[in-house]
Amino acid sequence: MVNATAGLHPLLDRVMIGVSQIGVPLMVLAVVLHWWVKVDRYHVRHAALSAGCAFLLGLAINQFILLFVHRIRPYDAGVSH
Image (cartoon, rainbow, N blue to C red; front, side):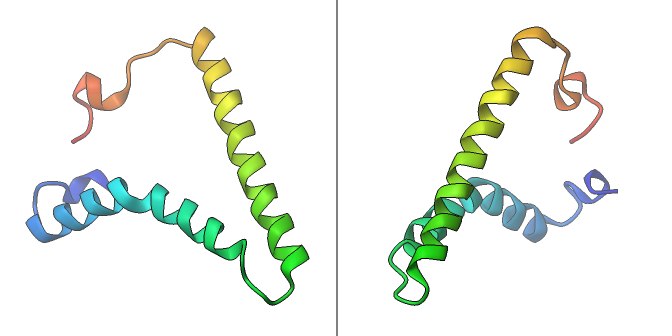
C-alpha cells in the first residue's frame, strides 16, 4: 500500500525523499535542543539520555544481527520502488 503511490505523485515523492533525508537529523536536533529546556530539566535530560542510549543499543543489536543474517533487501530484488 505504501509503495503503490511511489512515482505517481511527483510532489509527494519529493516530500517523502526530503523527509527521509532530513528526518533523523531533525530528531537528533530536537533531542539536543530539549537538553537546555528550563522547565523540569532533570526529567527532560533523563528522557534525552534514555532516547540516545535506546538508539545506540538498537543500532548495536541491528549490526550484530546483520553479521549472521544475510538476505537480499526487497528494493534490491526489484519487489518495491
